[in-house]
Amino acid sequence: MNIMTLILALIAVESSGNDNAIGDGGLAYGCLQLHACYVADAAEYAGEDWTHEDAFDRETSIKIVVAYMDRYATEKRLGRTVTIGDIARIHNGGPAGYKKQSTLKYWDKVEAELISRGAIASHN
Figure 1: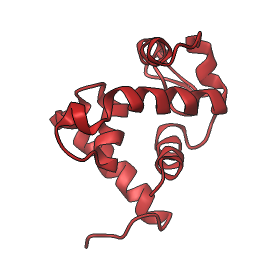
Figure 2: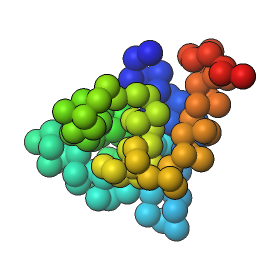
Figure 3: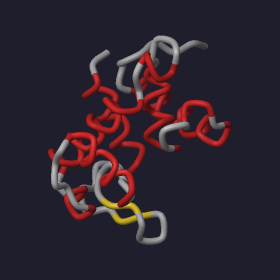
Figure 4: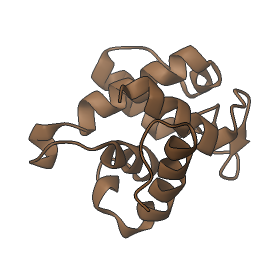
């Protein structure tokens, strides 16, 4: 599966595709519901001047997520092959999200979305 398929599932779960969504008590912006610290972290890594408001632009928000994953969802960092579940859980829970119990329910939602799109097989 390519990263865009996963990102489209993240968008569906995060905002039902609403590029102007504001959530998490006003802290999360755009279709991918990005927090300011996430955007700043990705911008620093990518050498970009992205601001939190850039999360309202779908194309830019996707670039932000890709940069964040290039930084944190790596085999070197995780010590093993990165899974799509790892990427979703890092998106939801930050750099250590892939090992947080609190991100498992989020991954379940993303996995269900991917199954409904025919992107992955159901494991039932």
